[in-house]
Amino acid sequence: MKNTGYDTNAGPTPAFGPDQEFQKYISDKKFHLQQCEDCGIVIFMPRVICPNCASLTLKWRPACGLGTIYSQATLRPRSKAGEPPPPPHSVVLVDLDEGPRMMSHLPGVAPEDIHVGMRVQARIESNETNYFITFQAIKNKL
Ligand SMILES: [Zn+2]
Image (tube, rainbow, N blue to C red; front, top):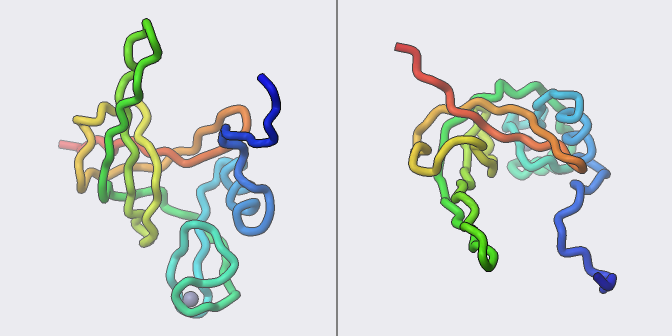
């Protein structure tokens, strides 16, 4: 295919600033979030300035990795000609126990088995170019 100068495929996360630090943590299999040293709120996405008080003193702290499903959207990809449609999958918004809301996936969980209020646990996955956070359901103990 001719190179048009536009890359429509998602590339790796930009490797500079707070995003780079976040990527470094998860490439080391550590899920860390920023916390403002002045007002105390925990922040996601990574940033330079506190969105609550405009402080520049943000520090990294380990996340507990637990959260609750806030919402879910099911994506049903179109099939290619002559092929069966790919299975539907979900995009979820997770309210982390520390406070921030994160968009992610629950790989391996059917959309109909995901519900608002469901407790989930973060895990770190990777592909050829990037590391990212996904979630898995926490099994209720009886
Ligand atoms: Zn703050």
